[in-house]
Image 1 (cartoon, rainbow, N blue to C red):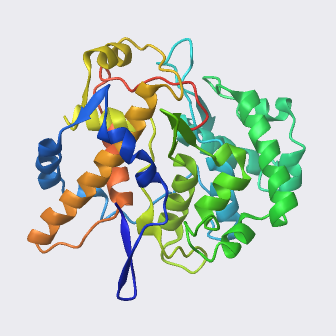
Image 2: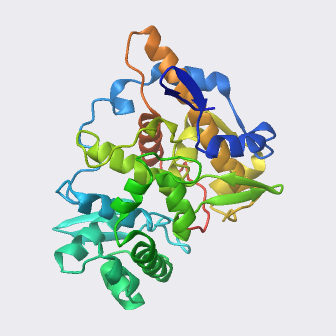
Length: 345
Protein backbone atom coordinates (compact mmCIF):
# COMPACT_ATOMS: atom_id res chain seq x y z
CA UNK A 1 0.00 0.00 0.00
CA UNK A 2 1.23 3.49 -0.74
CA UNK A 3 2.42 5.42 2.29
CA UNK A 4 3.54 8.97 2.74
CA UNK A 5 5.91 10.56 5.22
CA UNK A 6 4.44 13.22 7.49
CA UNK A 7 7.24 14.59 9.62
CA UNK A 8 8.71 11.52 11.28
CA UNK A 9 5.45 9.59 11.21
CA UNK A 10 4.45 7.26 8.38
CA UNK A 11 0.72 7.25 7.75
CA UNK A 12 -1.41 5.19 5.37
CA UNK A 13 -2.27 6.85 2.08
CA UNK A 14 -5.66 8.56 1.99
CA UNK A 15 -6.05 7.48 -1.64
CA UNK A 16 -8.88 4.90 -1.61
CA UNK A 17 -7.83 3.20 -4.86
CA UNK A 18 -5.33 0.54 -3.79
CA UNK A 19 -7.22 -0.62 -0.68
CA UNK A 20 -10.41 -0.96 -2.71
CA UNK A 21 -8.86 -3.17 -5.36
CA UNK A 22 -6.92 -5.49 -3.08
CA UNK A 23 -9.84 -7.97 -2.78
CA UNK A 24 -10.03 -8.07 -6.59
CA UNK A 25 -6.37 -8.83 -7.22
CA UNK A 26 -6.29 -11.38 -4.42
CA UNK A 27 -8.58 -13.71 -6.38
CA UNK A 28 -8.13 -12.83 -10.05
CA UNK A 29 -10.10 -15.13 -12.36
CA UNK A 30 -9.39 -13.76 -15.83
CA UNK A 31 -5.70 -12.85 -15.68
CA UNK A 32 -2.66 -13.07 -13.44
CA UNK A 33 0.31 -10.93 -12.44
CA UNK A 34 3.84 -12.31 -12.97
CA UNK A 35 5.86 -10.84 -10.09
CA UNK A 36 9.11 -12.42 -11.31
CA UNK A 37 8.68 -10.62 -14.61
CA UNK A 38 8.05 -7.35 -12.75
CA UNK A 39 11.50 -7.62 -11.17
CA UNK A 40 13.09 -8.38 -14.56
CA UNK A 41 11.40 -5.42 -16.24
CA UNK A 42 12.26 -3.09 -13.36
CA UNK A 43 15.97 -3.83 -13.69
CA UNK A 44 15.90 -2.90 -17.37
CA UNK A 45 14.18 0.49 -17.22
CA UNK A 46 16.45 3.49 -17.70
CA UNK A 47 16.07 7.23 -17.19
CA UNK A 48 14.92 7.85 -20.76
CA UNK A 49 12.16 5.24 -20.56
CA UNK A 50 11.06 6.61 -17.19
CA UNK A 51 11.11 10.22 -18.38
CA UNK A 52 13.30 11.41 -15.52
CA UNK A 53 15.12 13.86 -17.82
CA UNK A 54 11.96 15.06 -19.52
CA UNK A 55 11.37 18.75 -18.77
CA UNK A 56 8.50 19.54 -21.13
CA UNK A 57 5.67 17.62 -19.47
CA UNK A 58 2.36 18.55 -21.08
CA UNK A 59 3.74 21.41 -23.14
CA UNK A 60 3.43 21.89 -26.86
CA UNK A 61 1.15 23.29 -29.57
CA UNK A 62 -1.99 21.47 -28.34
CA UNK A 63 -1.77 22.96 -24.83
CA UNK A 64 -1.99 26.52 -23.55
CA UNK A 65 1.37 28.25 -23.85
CA UNK A 66 0.92 30.34 -20.70
CA UNK A 67 1.28 29.18 -17.11
CA UNK A 68 -1.59 30.78 -15.23
CA UNK A 69 -4.89 29.95 -13.55
CA UNK A 70 -6.23 29.51 -17.08
CA UNK A 71 -3.80 26.60 -17.46
CA UNK A 72 -5.38 24.93 -14.43
CA UNK A 73 -8.85 25.54 -15.84
CA UNK A 74 -7.78 24.15 -19.23
CA UNK A 75 -6.42 20.85 -17.95
CA UNK A 76 -9.32 20.33 -15.56
CA UNK A 77 -11.93 20.98 -18.26
CA UNK A 78 -10.06 18.86 -20.80
CA UNK A 79 -9.83 15.87 -18.50
CA UNK A 80 -13.59 15.77 -18.06
CA UNK A 81 -13.53 14.73 -21.75
CA UNK A 82 -10.43 12.55 -21.81
CA UNK A 83 -11.95 9.18 -22.74
CA UNK A 84 -12.68 6.85 -25.67
CA UNK A 85 -11.40 8.12 -28.99
CA UNK A 86 -11.85 4.96 -31.06
CA UNK A 87 -14.82 4.27 -33.32
CA UNK A 88 -17.21 1.59 -32.07
CA UNK A 89 -17.78 0.19 -35.56
CA UNK A 90 -14.09 0.23 -36.52
CA UNK A 91 -11.74 0.43 -33.51
CA UNK A 92 -8.82 1.12 -35.84
CA UNK A 93 -10.35 4.53 -36.59
CA UNK A 94 -9.32 7.04 -33.94
CA UNK A 95 -10.54 10.62 -33.62
CA UNK A 96 -8.27 13.02 -35.51
CA UNK A 97 -8.40 16.72 -36.25
CA UNK A 98 -6.20 19.35 -37.85
CA UNK A 99 -4.74 22.28 -35.98
CA UNK A 100 -2.30 24.76 -37.49
CA UNK A 101 -1.41 22.43 -40.34
CA UNK A 102 -0.80 19.33 -38.22
CA UNK A 103 -3.13 16.38 -37.72
CA UNK A 104 -3.50 15.28 -34.10
CA UNK A 105 -5.28 12.13 -32.99
CA UNK A 106 -6.65 10.61 -29.81
CA UNK A 107 -6.23 12.64 -26.65
CA UNK A 108 -3.89 15.06 -28.41
CA UNK A 109 -6.63 15.65 -30.96
CA UNK A 110 -9.06 16.49 -28.18
CA UNK A 111 -6.60 18.96 -26.62
CA UNK A 112 -5.95 20.47 -30.04
CA UNK A 113 -9.69 20.95 -30.61
CA UNK A 114 -10.01 22.82 -27.31
CA UNK A 115 -7.07 25.12 -28.06
CA UNK A 116 -8.51 25.74 -31.53
CA UNK A 117 -11.86 26.62 -29.95
CA UNK A 118 -10.13 29.22 -27.77
CA UNK A 119 -8.37 30.62 -30.84
CA UNK A 120 -11.79 30.93 -32.52
CA UNK A 121 -13.21 32.93 -29.61
CA UNK A 122 -15.14 30.14 -27.88
CA UNK A 123 -14.43 30.55 -24.18
CA UNK A 124 -14.45 26.89 -23.21
CA UNK A 125 -12.79 27.89 -19.91
CA UNK A 126 -15.78 29.97 -18.80
CA UNK A 127 -18.30 28.16 -16.59
CA UNK A 128 -21.28 30.08 -17.97
CA UNK A 129 -20.29 29.32 -21.55
CA UNK A 130 -19.93 25.62 -20.73
CA UNK A 131 -23.23 25.51 -18.88
CA UNK A 132 -25.03 26.77 -21.98
CA UNK A 133 -23.10 24.75 -24.59
CA UNK A 134 -25.30 23.13 -27.25
CA UNK A 135 -24.74 19.77 -28.90
CA UNK A 136 -24.26 21.59 -32.20
CA UNK A 137 -21.52 23.81 -30.76
CA UNK A 138 -19.77 20.75 -29.36
CA UNK A 139 -19.91 19.04 -32.74
CA UNK A 140 -18.23 22.06 -34.32
CA UNK A 141 -15.60 22.31 -31.59
CA UNK A 142 -14.65 18.67 -32.12
CA UNK A 143 -14.93 18.63 -35.90
CA UNK A 144 -12.26 16.42 -37.37
CA UNK A 145 -10.94 14.35 -40.21
CA UNK A 146 -12.09 11.31 -38.23
CA UNK A 147 -15.25 12.08 -36.20
CA UNK A 148 -15.15 12.36 -32.42
CA UNK A 149 -17.14 9.52 -30.85
CA UNK A 150 -19.66 10.21 -28.09
CA UNK A 151 -19.93 13.93 -28.93
CA UNK A 152 -23.36 14.29 -27.31
CA UNK A 153 -22.04 12.68 -24.12
CA UNK A 154 -19.10 15.09 -24.16
CA UNK A 155 -21.42 18.06 -24.66
CA UNK A 156 -23.52 16.95 -21.70
CA UNK A 157 -20.39 16.58 -19.57
CA UNK A 158 -19.24 20.10 -20.45
CA UNK A 159 -22.65 21.54 -19.54
CA UNK A 160 -22.61 19.65 -16.25
CA UNK A 161 -19.04 20.81 -15.55
CA UNK A 162 -19.99 24.43 -16.15
CA UNK A 163 -23.01 24.17 -13.88
CA UNK A 164 -21.08 22.60 -11.00
CA UNK A 165 -18.21 25.06 -11.36
CA UNK A 166 -20.63 27.99 -11.34
CA UNK A 167 -22.76 26.77 -8.45
CA UNK A 168 -20.09 25.33 -6.12
CA UNK A 169 -16.75 26.94 -7.00
CA UNK A 170 -17.58 30.40 -8.39
CA UNK A 171 -16.61 29.21 -11.86
CA UNK A 172 -13.00 28.29 -11.06
CA UNK A 173 -11.14 25.02 -10.51
CA UNK A 174 -8.52 27.10 -8.70
CA UNK A 175 -11.11 27.66 -5.96
CA UNK A 176 -11.58 23.90 -5.71
CA UNK A 177 -7.83 23.45 -5.31
CA UNK A 178 -7.60 26.15 -2.65
CA UNK A 179 -10.42 24.53 -0.67
CA UNK A 180 -8.62 21.19 -0.84
CA UNK A 181 -5.67 22.47 1.15
CA UNK A 182 -3.46 21.56 -1.81
CA UNK A 183 -3.85 17.85 -1.15
CA UNK A 184 -5.04 15.29 -3.67
CA UNK A 185 -6.64 13.20 -0.92
CA UNK A 186 -7.94 14.38 2.43
CA UNK A 187 -10.79 12.24 3.75
CA UNK A 188 -13.15 13.47 1.06
CA UNK A 189 -11.85 17.04 0.86
CA UNK A 190 -8.80 16.66 -1.40
CA UNK A 191 -8.64 17.64 -5.06
CA UNK A 192 -9.33 14.14 -6.37
CA UNK A 193 -11.94 13.61 -3.66
CA UNK A 194 -13.82 16.77 -4.63
CA UNK A 195 -13.58 16.13 -8.37
CA UNK A 196 -15.02 12.64 -7.95
CA UNK A 197 -17.70 13.77 -5.50
CA UNK A 198 -18.91 16.98 -7.13
CA UNK A 199 -18.41 16.27 -10.84
CA UNK A 200 -20.19 13.08 -11.93
CA UNK A 201 -17.94 12.83 -14.99
CA UNK A 202 -14.91 12.49 -12.73
CA UNK A 203 -16.41 9.74 -10.56
CA UNK A 204 -14.96 6.37 -11.58
CA UNK A 205 -15.97 3.36 -9.50
CA UNK A 206 -17.20 -0.17 -10.20
CA UNK A 207 -18.90 -2.96 -8.28
CA UNK A 208 -17.11 -6.29 -8.06
CA UNK A 209 -18.89 -9.05 -6.14
CA UNK A 210 -20.82 -6.39 -4.24
CA UNK A 211 -17.67 -4.47 -3.34
CA UNK A 212 -16.95 -0.96 -4.55
CA UNK A 213 -13.71 -0.68 -6.50
CA UNK A 214 -12.33 2.84 -6.93
CA UNK A 215 -10.19 3.99 -9.87
CA UNK A 216 -10.83 7.75 -10.38
CA UNK A 217 -8.56 7.60 -13.40
CA UNK A 218 -9.24 11.01 -14.92
CA UNK A 219 -9.40 12.87 -11.61
CA UNK A 220 -5.96 11.54 -10.69
CA UNK A 221 -4.68 12.20 -14.21
CA UNK A 222 -5.76 15.85 -14.05
CA UNK A 223 -3.73 16.27 -10.86
CA UNK A 224 -0.76 14.44 -12.38
CA UNK A 225 -0.81 16.55 -15.53
CA UNK A 226 -0.98 19.82 -13.63
CA UNK A 227 1.72 18.77 -11.19
CA UNK A 228 4.11 17.90 -14.00
CA UNK A 229 3.25 20.98 -16.06
CA UNK A 230 3.49 23.46 -13.17
CA UNK A 231 5.85 21.74 -10.76
CA UNK A 232 8.55 24.43 -10.97
CA UNK A 233 6.27 27.30 -9.93
CA UNK A 234 3.81 28.26 -7.22
CA UNK A 235 0.57 27.96 -9.19
CA UNK A 236 -0.19 24.34 -8.38
CA UNK A 237 1.20 22.73 -5.26
CA UNK A 238 0.14 19.23 -4.19
CA UNK A 239 1.64 17.94 -0.97
CA UNK A 240 0.69 14.30 -1.49
CA UNK A 241 1.32 13.78 -5.20
CA UNK A 242 3.17 10.55 -4.38
CA UNK A 243 -0.13 9.06 -3.25
CA UNK A 244 -1.48 8.94 -6.80
CA UNK A 245 -1.73 5.60 -8.57
CA UNK A 246 -1.21 5.02 -12.27
CA UNK A 247 -4.15 5.96 -14.44
CA UNK A 248 -6.01 2.81 -15.45
CA UNK A 249 -6.89 3.15 -19.12
CA UNK A 250 -6.62 1.16 -22.38
CA UNK A 251 -2.90 1.50 -23.02
CA UNK A 252 -1.46 0.49 -19.65
CA UNK A 253 -2.94 -3.04 -19.61
CA UNK A 254 -1.75 -3.40 -23.20
CA UNK A 255 1.77 -2.39 -22.15
CA UNK A 256 1.85 -4.69 -19.13
CA UNK A 257 0.66 -7.59 -21.27
CA UNK A 258 3.27 -6.91 -23.96
CA UNK A 259 5.94 -6.80 -21.24
CA UNK A 260 4.81 -10.18 -19.92
CA UNK A 261 3.67 -8.81 -16.56
CA UNK A 262 -0.04 -9.39 -17.10
CA UNK A 263 -1.00 -12.89 -18.29
CA UNK A 264 -4.48 -13.09 -19.79
CA UNK A 265 -6.60 -16.22 -19.57
CA UNK A 266 -7.29 -17.90 -22.91
CA UNK A 267 -10.85 -16.61 -22.87
CA UNK A 268 -9.84 -13.01 -22.11
CA UNK A 269 -7.02 -13.13 -24.67
CA UNK A 270 -9.47 -14.29 -27.33
CA UNK A 271 -11.83 -11.42 -26.54
CA UNK A 272 -9.09 -8.78 -26.60
CA UNK A 273 -7.35 -10.14 -29.69
CA UNK A 274 -10.69 -10.68 -31.43
CA UNK A 275 -11.65 -7.07 -30.74
CA UNK A 276 -14.77 -8.07 -28.83
CA UNK A 277 -16.39 -5.49 -26.59
CA UNK A 278 -15.78 -6.15 -22.90
CA UNK A 279 -18.66 -4.56 -21.00
CA UNK A 280 -17.98 -1.80 -18.50
CA UNK A 281 -18.11 -3.10 -14.91
CA UNK A 282 -17.91 -6.71 -16.07
CA UNK A 283 -15.57 -8.94 -14.02
CA UNK A 284 -13.07 -8.99 -16.89
CA UNK A 285 -12.97 -5.21 -17.20
CA UNK A 286 -12.69 -4.57 -13.46
CA UNK A 287 -9.93 -7.16 -13.13
CA UNK A 288 -8.02 -5.66 -16.06
CA UNK A 289 -8.00 -2.23 -14.50
CA UNK A 290 -7.39 -3.44 -10.93
CA UNK A 291 -4.50 -5.69 -11.96
CA UNK A 292 -3.01 -2.82 -13.96
CA UNK A 293 -2.93 -0.45 -10.99
CA UNK A 294 -1.69 -3.11 -8.60
CA UNK A 295 1.03 -4.41 -10.94
CA UNK A 296 2.21 -0.87 -11.63
CA UNK A 297 2.50 -0.23 -7.89
CA UNK A 298 4.64 -3.36 -7.54
CA UNK A 299 6.71 -2.22 -10.52
CA UNK A 300 7.33 1.16 -8.89
CA UNK A 301 8.62 -0.57 -5.75
CA UNK A 302 10.98 -2.80 -7.75
CA UNK A 303 12.20 0.05 -9.96
CA UNK A 304 13.13 2.14 -6.93
CA UNK A 305 14.82 -0.82 -5.26
CA UNK A 306 16.93 -1.32 -8.39
CA UNK A 307 17.69 2.40 -8.64
CA UNK A 308 18.72 2.57 -4.98
CA UNK A 309 21.29 -0.18 -5.56
CA UNK A 310 22.77 1.88 -8.39
CA UNK A 311 22.77 5.10 -6.37
CA UNK A 312 20.04 6.72 -8.48
CA UNK A 313 17.20 8.88 -7.19
CA UNK A 314 13.80 7.31 -6.70
CA UNK A 315 11.11 7.88 -9.31
CA UNK A 316 7.40 8.43 -8.76
CA UNK A 317 4.28 6.69 -9.94
CA UNK A 318 4.04 9.42 -12.58
CA UNK A 319 7.25 8.12 -14.15
CA UNK A 320 5.86 4.58 -14.18
CA UNK A 321 2.64 5.75 -15.81
CA UNK A 322 4.62 7.70 -18.43
CA UNK A 323 6.76 4.67 -19.21
CA UNK A 324 3.83 2.26 -19.49
CA UNK A 325 1.65 4.65 -21.50
CA UNK A 326 4.39 5.07 -24.09
CA UNK A 327 5.00 1.32 -24.15
CA UNK A 328 1.29 0.77 -24.79
CA UNK A 329 1.16 3.36 -27.56
CA UNK A 330 4.28 1.89 -29.17
CA UNK A 331 3.21 -1.75 -28.93
CA UNK A 332 2.94 -3.64 -32.24
CA UNK A 333 -0.28 -2.95 -34.10
CA UNK A 334 -1.42 -6.56 -33.74
CA UNK A 335 -1.14 -6.34 -29.93
CA UNK A 336 -4.48 -4.71 -29.26
CA UNK A 337 -5.86 -2.92 -26.24
CA UNK A 338 -9.17 -4.08 -24.81
CA UNK A 339 -12.37 -2.41 -25.97
CA UNK A 340 -14.88 -1.09 -23.46
CA UNK A 341 -17.55 1.53 -24.14
CA UNK A 342 -17.09 3.93 -21.26
CA UNK A 343 -16.54 7.55 -20.32
CA UNK A 344 -14.18 6.52 -17.52
CA UNK A 345 -11.09 6.29 -19.75
